[in-house]
Image (cartoon, rainbow, N blue to C red; front, side, top):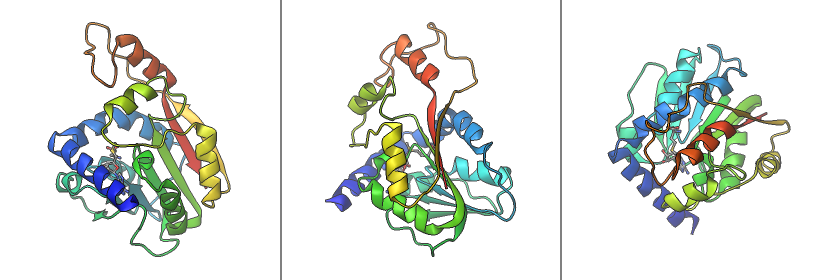
Length: 225
Ligand SMILES: C[S@@+](CC[C@H](N)C(=O)[O-])C[C@H]1O[C@@H](n2cnc3c(N)ncnc32)[C@H](O)[C@@H]1O
């Protein structure tokens, strides 16, 4: 069941990749991820993992911030095919529910808008905990979470099922997977929002007011250790 559901997600993101949405996500997600990563020291001794890395832009970002080595894990072949290679960055086609790495391989892990797509999200969280060193940090960024003003619109617009969890439930799941310290906060995109005349309605933001509410709420960040 879970295999079939994972395949459905993979196929959906192959379609997104073919439509060029992998590159567009970098533009939408980068400001929030940069702010989240500011809290986490990253140096040449760090081995970092990006789960559901899409076209790999956040792998490059972690390298630019000084990580010695970065591995991106991505289920969609379409996304991987569009990823740009770079020294110190390896991209692996795999599911985050079965990470092909030994225990405690990484000191940093990141997941950007990817965790809630995984049908067996508890298994994915246990896998992240397993491959992270005990003192390792796991940073999660999400724009779709319980309490987000656009959650119901996004769920209607998506062609796959997602986990819509309020932040305290994410905390509980992380703790159950073995993380002992979980901090939760929001970050806002510092760029000025689109004006009403620049804004085009879409299934994601039906009205300009919806878009402004989304910008005001910001992205959810989970910082777990
Ligand atoms: C919304 S995209 C975000 C991509 C990227 N993190 C970004 O911000 O541009 C979600 C990504 O998670 C990937 N994904 C979903 N389920 C996955 C799984 N079980 N294992 C690995 N990747 C997965 C999808 O293929 C997709 O590329």
